[in-house]
Image (cartoon, rainbow, N blue to C red; front, side, top):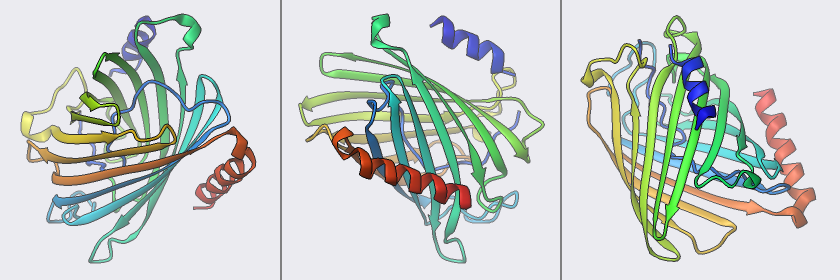
Length: 274
């Protein structure tokens, strides 16, 4: 916990960034095992988004976001993920939006912590038509814990604009929380909260903050597959509303080392070109 506290003291320094519904997920602390590659598709559709162009950003109403995420485990405690963001919508809103890279380290099992702990950083670009800030940085401490059939995870994300409308401001605090209960081994139901409140020292008025709550289901029929789906509501004027999301992922293991490495390399090259 001291490591997490240090990061907060260093980076807490406002404005609120444009809502970014490309990867709606509360992360767990474990990293992908060494040699494995996880390929995920994040899909979500916004039924109640902004109706008009705002601050140069296209409307989010009735838009589909499709994000490809490829994560590779390099050591038992270090992974790196690549994202490719895509938008599908009417009125010329269909395009490749941008890409991010996300290295993450986790506390080794040898530390014998009573909870999971990891630290993620995410850096990348999105087109100005889809985000008020094109180059951004995120620092995300992650902590999680399982008690019998209950699971909880907290992500205390810190977001910083490096170029765009909000680059003159400090880090923005975006807390995410997940609580779930396993009905049986393969099925868990839970709630996921996603917030964004501005700089910690200068909280924005409530209606300018972002607060979303999703009812979600996780299916765990195989260690190689990931499935999460949910429906979320927004509670402020600044928050998109009525969002349906699905995350589907598959893990390639060490015995498929050649194919997974080639897939990882191809994605990296594609993101670099675009």
